[in-house]
Length: 204
Length: 204
Image 1: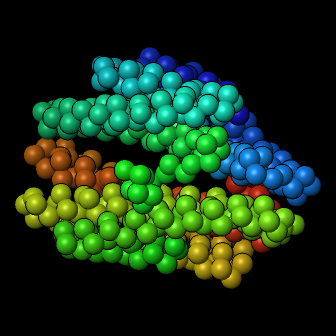
Image 2 (image 1 turned 90 degrees about the vertical axis):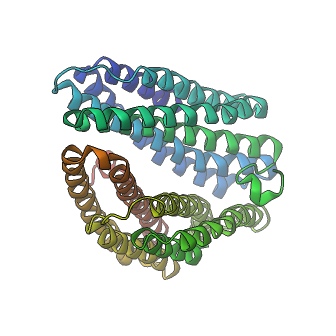
């Protein structure tokens, strides 16, 4: 499931930058397998909980997997959204996509890949690296957003296309949030430390 | 937790329509308790799974609660986003918020409330009613989005404020998605039927 999601992000990024409607359509087709995997993994986890009654760290692992599949499935949905925009834009007059979007895409893809690696290798260190990169993604988003606003004011006729670019930037930012959620869950699994909402836990 | 989230949605809607920065700030303060509740409920569920080893429908209930708190927490985060926009807009020149936003807000609030009622009363019928309302929210969003695009093209100087209104519409639409997720989980809990991704399950 994770491998497919990673592939979907990479392809969605390419389809959008290259205005490749065919690649976008093929990528959207991958979503069905991800959805099916979410259901299958949940069922499997419930069976394990019912029959094997795992304890301590195994119990934590199984319940966290049930949370993680939700994040993975939503990342795939966001990749589908990007592909839909790629198809829409491929029908419009060509225009230069904001130069930072592909860079942001590469960064987000690396976060999702590393969050999954962190899970597989049970490495909280790797998970922390994912969380730290989230700030850079936020900076990308705010910079792109500001520049797109300026472009909209300057060229109102391009508002529609520019709003699409803004949506894609927003979806990349949300993918990074889901990668961060995954990383936080890995840290909880490995170290037994819940690092969500640091303020409410008094740890900074 | 659910009651607090409901209250946050209602207050966020009011703060945004009435450009009430004080109410917005107070509403943002409620988020800490929701975050704390997410962590506490997860811990409680893990303890129940470890010590009581619940079977069948109880097991399903506990694991679904662990998924549901994630949706509730994200709805609260979206309410915080709306409050932040309310504060930002309260500092700008007054303008008329799109008339459909408050209507959309009321509809979304009812979906979250009914999804929670469905959970508490274990009613899959009520959960289906929530899912059916999601299409109306999507229609609201697409209509508002189209009208805001037209307004941006007509008055480029107002692009910034209009983008804020568009963001709020988008967040309401995402809250409705989370309410739909909650409702789908309730149906799985009550009927044992996984209604996520209907296409992949061959049930239409």
